[in-house]
Image 1 (cartoon, rainbow, N blue to C red):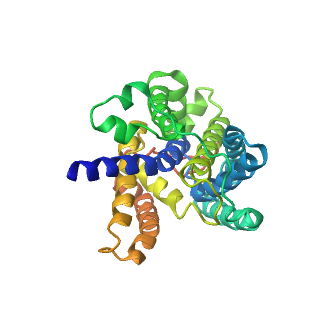
Image 2 (cartoon, one colour):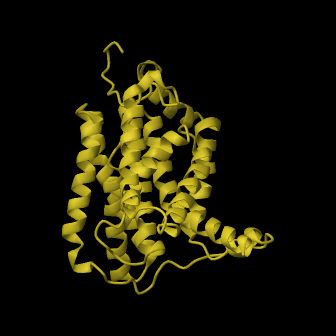
Length: 308
């Protein structure tokens, strides 16, 4: 009995961690380049809507995922334009992106609201993982391929950050953009590409919700997950591999919270994403007082020739 309960908790924790992990990995890349994007929630909801609309019209969930990546990336480019090119306040730009994303998705998604997806994303079994005793059939079998994509992306990003020249360049832009500029690095281009990648990953995270986790479209279906992804970035100390464990921890917490909502007030559950938001803003404001592994130039626009 206890073993069955534990296996179910692990399975649901992994399933719920997929969108958190995908969005957090994208934000880690963005912030490693020195840009904070608080628009993750907005990009996720736009990705969820575009993925469902395209998959519903075409019958292909993978076209839906591609559409989510494109829409999430385009939304992120608007943030890059304001924060990198115009040097606007990154916090304000990101919050505006979230508000626009939530409002626009609610407006455009009204005709699709409540419609189930005829052909949801198929679940897959990974041969080696599904054969593990106890955990294999119960945890790793019958999961979305996007969950395993998140695992692979985490390892790929770790390798990119620490084992490739391009990864070192990206991290240097987030730590000391002036020094990177002197060495011939196009700081603005690196930051644009990082923000674009973060938006595409947030779009995929949204696609997971509307194509795999709950194959339908519902207004506000992200329910604060974008904010939790931002908290995971801090919790994981901007490390892709640590983000895997952090995403599972938050996913398992959410499953347990709903499982025990008889004992835990529903109002507290609804309040949780906003508590993470406040924590994120407080830790960001503390800056150098709390060194959690944040890039040195995080949140600061780079102006050539200006003293830091």
